[in-house]
Image 1 (cartoon, rainbow, N blue to C red):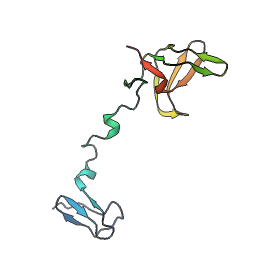
Image 2 (tube, rainbow, N blue to C red):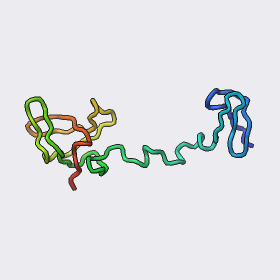
Image 3 (cartoon, rainbow, N blue to C red):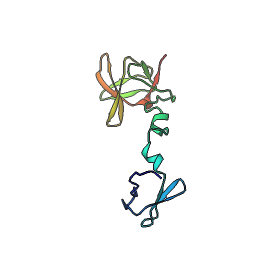
Image 4 (spheres, one colour):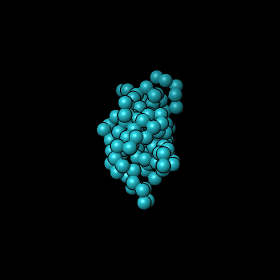
Length: 122
């Protein structure tokens, strides 16, 4: 048996006991596997297995990619036409009002776009 502290992760009680490969808490009845909690990097998390930025067709996007808009986008009085090519996009870790791409468009300046309205160009 390991000499680790096996306090209950739910109620932090120290009155826990091993039950096969699991540990159990008699106070709140929570059961857990301490190896799974001690090594969270060993298992593949959903954020690692699924790319965070997917275009309208489900293709992963990266910073520096070239994309094209998939529909007309209104910007005040102006409209960005469907198929407009956007070079050198920058993906945002912290989305701005739901927009996860920062880019520059000639004639429009710096703008934000959503991944769902662009497709990656090869």
